[in-house]
Length: 64
Image 1 (cartoon, rainbow, N blue to C red):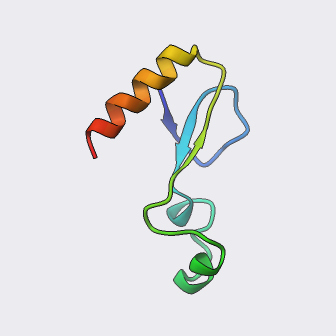
Image 2: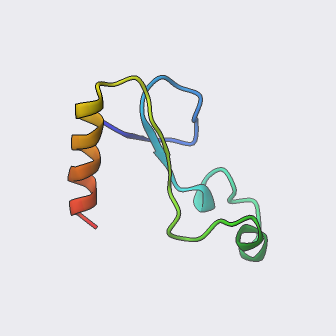
């Protein structure tokens, strides 16, 4: 259900890893200063049915 993309201006749910995508041009130190950690992910919730979103997140979180 979730796409792994850097574009967060969409109607579908997305997940990104800012440290390796949108903020990859920053040094590790600058990322830390900005509050970005290696384990941080950003969820952008779209217009899918809430039950589908919750199920997709549950399925993904079981894997980590």
